[in-house]
Amino acid sequence: MDALPLDQVIVGDCIEVMNRLPERCVDLIFADPPYNLQLQQELYRPNLTRVDAVDDEWDRFESFEAYDQFTTAWLTAARRVLKDTGTLWVIGTYHNIFRIGKILQDLGFWILNDIAWIKANPMPQFRGVRFTNAHETLIWAQKHKGKPYTFNYADLKALNDDLQMRSDWHIPLCTGKERLRVNGAKAHATQKPEALLMRIVLATTKPGDVVLDPFLGTGTTAAVAKRLGRRWIGIERDPQYAALAEQRIAAVVPYPPGFVVGYGDGRRRAPRVPFGALVECGLIAPGATLYFQRRPDATAQVLANGHIRYTDGTVGSIHQIARHITGAPCNGWEHWHYRDADTDALLPIDCLRQAYLEGCGGK
Image 1 (cartoon, helix red, strand yellow):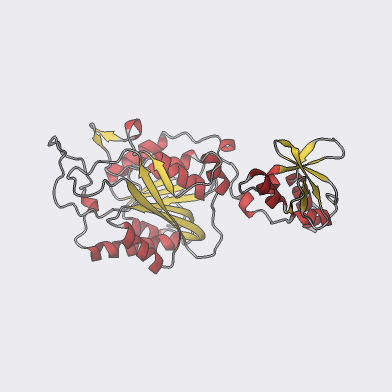
Image 2 (cartoon, one colour):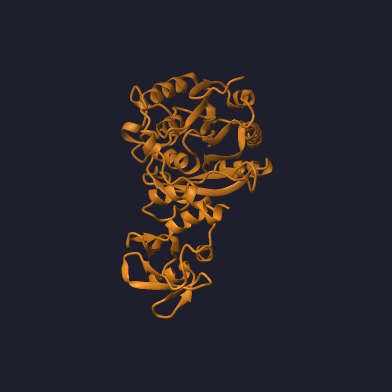
């Protein structure tokens, strides 16, 4: 393929298709490969109704060795098309995720996190011989250890009520109107909820990035990518699934551009500026008073070495004194204010940091 087939569903074998794509052409890969569940017999509920389990032909492999060969082949092809700064997500269960993790590491990927997708409504363990399988595992890995990659920390924190996003994600299974059906039956046995992909795409891509799903199924990844203003490529070998995906994606209306750009990763990668540099540069003078956000009685004086002295005599950095006041970890740049000489208004000291970066710090 000479041109990158953006925003297209490609019908074919994912290994063959990825090997025809240009090298280093995608920013993110989300993969939901066959789980190799090794089902030996049909499963029935206590009321003798049959469980609609994953028993499709595409999930059958003759041996672990055959599954490992398949996994190595598609991950090798995926690594080839992933940009050096790109990352890959792969989801699985205990049947396959540990084998995939080993192969990922053998191929040179560096694992950043494993995520437990905790299902709010898991299928019970009807035979009563094991624990209920209430989660699936996602591995998030980068192509090269130490390379920069996209992680929109602040967006994830905002999504989680201003708390750092944890590695246990409580998201319901795909049900109701979201679950695609054909003649009343599930269109795809393992359709993932859009909420799961929403979090992944929002966390690890930027608007305009290219997202690839080599096992597209009924199109969840592409639908979410389109909605969030990302470009996408979907590969699906089953023509029926591909047709359903195309129909589903065509109906998606992207969010307005101004509403899909949040904090991004700018805060995390902003140049580090010591508060003392502002004193050295003359942007704030020793003896100036700082005011703690939402605490008009909490003030501190700036010292020549960049530390501040709180009203009770405690001396430390802007972060240490903020923690001293609140009893919890604090980013001092977000809490301390100074009085502007021209307007007499209280402004965040982060305004001074920006002035430093544009002036003193930019020289």
